[in-house]
Length: 125
Image (cartoon, rainbow, N blue to C red):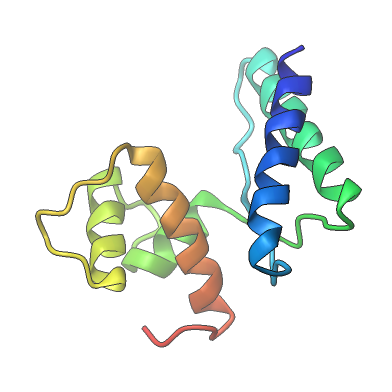
């Protein structure tokens, strides 16, 4: 049931976002394998649900970035801490130093997109 909910939410999200036009790229941050296989199963199940939704619109994930490559690209350090990543995202986006992201996930998602854009020379950084 959980994966069906993820797929349904993704379908709704895609329908809403595609009103603005087609996607140029769909980027995923890879999951480093955990020792607990159940955790790996959950992540891969969620990815599969998203992939099914994407395929209904003719899309697929076309870039997979490792956490260390994201960190290295946005901070210069492949082992950067969450606070360093958030600071780099603020700098790259021109946000004030006191800007607070709602969650670490929010700044991490921005970092993934920024890493993709930088690595492909799609933005001036």
